[in-house]
Image (cartoon, rainbow, N blue to C red; front, top):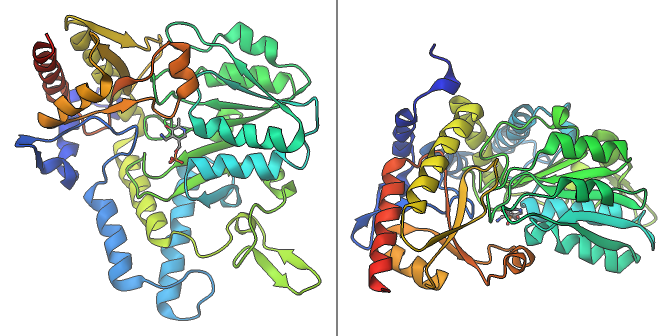
Length: 413
Ligand code: PMP
């Protein structure tokens, strides 16, 4: 059978040619980019969509009657439609364009939670979360007297589901949970978790920053209430992001920020807010970025997200085997369901030193706490080295990584 999801791993290497940044040498070696969890490289299609808007169509959106403004508006709103289809939202009104996952989560904390939270209420998160899915809840808890509670994880980096479900009492007003851990790669069993939360009457926000770039996401079938993600991790431009929310919930929420574009009518006495999703989009948006993001959605749709997931799972399995064979390696994060990310340590080499030695060999990885300090504390570590995959990586990249690590081990022997 020649179904897209049965595409052999080798075919995926061809996509690398679409990414100009991957064609360069760094420190005299062909670049191996293993930092896509921080920010993914952009294909030519995205770069060209942005450049073409800037060259020919640049104008402000929504308000202009002239041709350039029409063209800009069409491409910008076209990207919203593409995003709507990509995550199977039920309406384009549910696609709020933001600057990234961080802003999307802050929007929910301030517009959905802040008006209703009271002392005694709880927000539930897990130990796996990125700071962007911790700090906005801390802020709103401080503002309202509500309490932030945290579900534990096990030593493999998996959420302890029984403990999580026990914490789901009527006091919990919102569960904020990551789709995939950026530090450990653990994929949360969202269907189960959301099912339990819904039974307990809890609103669920999914931090999908590491979900959407790596697998097919259908927000309606997931059953969550909000899903937040970033453009730059899904091969689009920085400064773009999405908050998907159920229309009914968004409708009832007050605006997040005031300004142009989010209004229908303004007088000094009162303002009538715009309809969804514009009510949440004050001011001139990142027009070129969103147009580029639309091109990224087209690019990913052309490949198929099920194929991307299969490719990355297979590559991740190879990476784990190859890393484990290196003397002195300690894998951090060994969840049963894991993809695209692997954290590790090598002997007692400081992760930053490791990252620097690898960079000298043209291999880009990330080192540090990965914006997940509580998670690092859970493992008793100041940080880790992390290799993260994108659809353009292949086995040669993994071999270069392990070769560079062998060298580092010898340097520090
Ligand atoms: N959540 C997770 C799981 C992430 O990996 C990141 C980015 N590292 C964020 C949230 C924040 O995304 P952004 O900086 O694009 O807002």
